Image 1 (tube, helix red, strand yellow):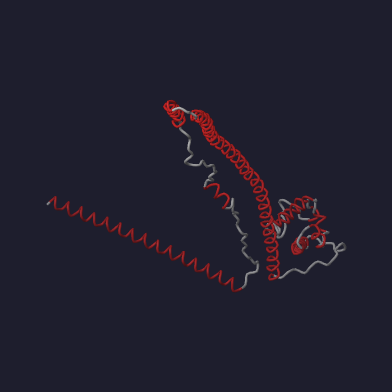
Image 2 (cartoon, helix red, strand yellow):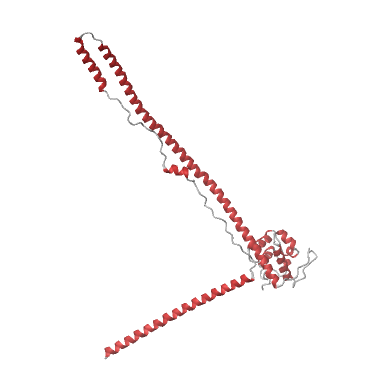
Length: 329
């Protein structure tokens, strides 16, 4: 037989003083279905609160162990109800007298208080989990930040080295071309000065008979010089680095943006006002009426389909009968 407010006789002794810690835990779990009651039951087993210990416990004892005051009051009240028919509960060790039995209205309100503590525990648990989650995300993102920016630093270092190498190479190529042209110009100048000396030397003649030989020599010497080509620079070389759009965009645009979801809270209250309770009942009633209306419509549709099906079968039988009579006639 199940004893109201306590464990069944099949699993626990009738006398509270004979309960083990497991019996006490089962009794505690009969007082509420929330996680907080399971925590109380686990606590009783953990610190070995057996029947005799619970029998002399006070509200102060239980709250000191971690029970909410309202729950401690409920435990003592239910325990008193269970033992009142078995034997008189000793009161010499009580720090305060046993409370009077609660009225139904008080019981309902006390239950609401119990639900409130469960809601508080649930809210705290969710916020605590959220705090741990964002803390873990922060650590992960900071670690990933180091890795990603390390890749950027490596890329910048490689590209800078490659760019510097290409600038040096191109500069060397342009410099070589200009130096070769300069050497050719200087060689031509040297040769022209030698030729000029020969021409100047052949200028000093005193006899008309020597004029023809002088002309021939001047023409020959100058011909060799004038035939040589000179490198004339018609377009100056240039050396500059043209940075790509990717580089410009990287400098101009930010590297990242933060993906963030704001916390969202839904305010809940254990105590439902009379107006809210009526609104909920009316909404439930409207929903039930709508469900009945839909069910009736579906039923009528099925009946109409069945009627048409039967009418179709009757018409077909009449047609077969008429055709048979004509054939026999």
